[in-house]
Length: 198
Image (cartoon, rainbow, N blue to C red; front, side, top):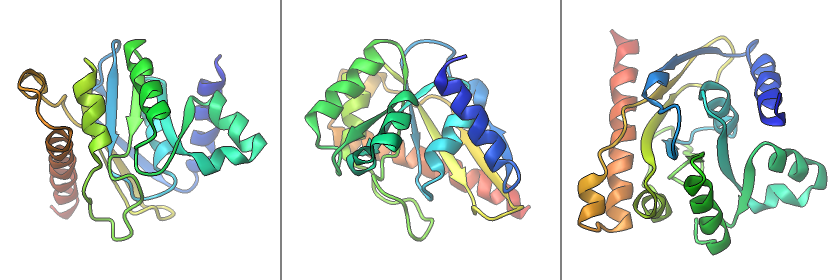
């Protein structure tokens, strides 16, 4: 068993007493080939929650400050995380992300770049559109629907792949592609939040 899989099991066991997970749409994630999982961001627990609910190993970008602690940095690296400077303008991190996709792996991104303090979905950074345009990856939107409260149901919804052919063909701007991705995440959140109200 890989360290990544071992880590996801440990995290899952640690979180189960606190949250009632409901995972929807895992079948939308391709079993092979490059994939980008794009999720909203409401908690520091979002990366591990996406990691334990996605059927594929995910490579996550993590803020470089986390790697300054040697022990934590080593654990993060073994868990497929790699450092990025704030704002997704780190060229080395961008190249690393593209290499991950070229190797047919899964890249996990939080387009907003930081947690939403209100729970509402904010504007995404253009770096996400950059990855979508510069790779042949399947783009899967993901909506995490909280709250993160003990005993409450926590939904993780994986939507259907976002159509990218036309955007790539006409060489759309990265910011436009990011907006399309964010709209898909918002629609997922709205749809599955309303289900709770019925």
